[in-house]
Length: 319
Image 1: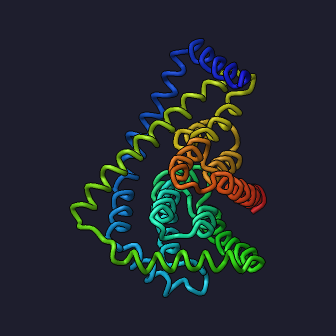
Image 2 (image 1 turned 45 degrees about the horizontal axis):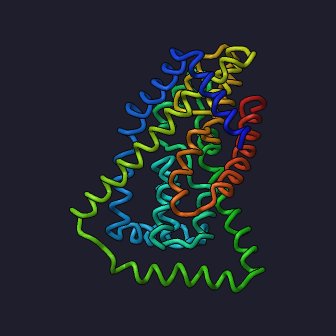
């Protein structure tokens, strides 16, 4: 306890020693949240919540099941979570899975399995920000980078479902409980729909609160870029390390470095796969109230980052 207290005091002293720099870093985080995250993410959060409250999530999941049933062996709600996680972007994957688990539409096993691969950077951000950077750095073939960002997690989701199934087969009693849990709740929840006006109000309140929390984490993580000012490293190294704190500003920080283009792309793609400390904190805010394991999420995120980093290293240096 004493060490924790001393660590907190040291952080306070560091911030007070350079208040102008701390203010600037925090301001940049707050600006990124207000100008990029809120207008991009809030509409998706609202639509997703309304779909959950109205029962449209199950209908969409059933539609997806007709297409993906031979690839993904998840429930209809699980397929809906995969769709939202991949197409709406981070942190919608964590938010949707948490909501579905909290309302007993997913079992704990399925929820934690989905979190392993469906909480990624959104295509809108990739197309709007990353593709122009790739072109500027001389990469005009975009499909290999799209595969690394979305294809690798999609394949990992197929792999992890078989690992989970194999684990369940060793414990048939646990498997039966999970199947009963999902099926019984899916049947009973079909009748628990609310009016559109009520869904809009509840969605607006819940998602506004969630966005405020996310903004706090982004500002907090960005402010602690000040710690790197006290580390005896080159500016390029500091910019790369800062991207692992918060990725929205971190991508730009890597882009303006003087390192070779191949290294810029490698580090940008790697940090996007990892998500940054800020993204992990945001994910934990959704998982905390549900009891889902942030440790399990981190384990799979690190594994995926290592796989993706290896892929991008080969792609940017040898292909």
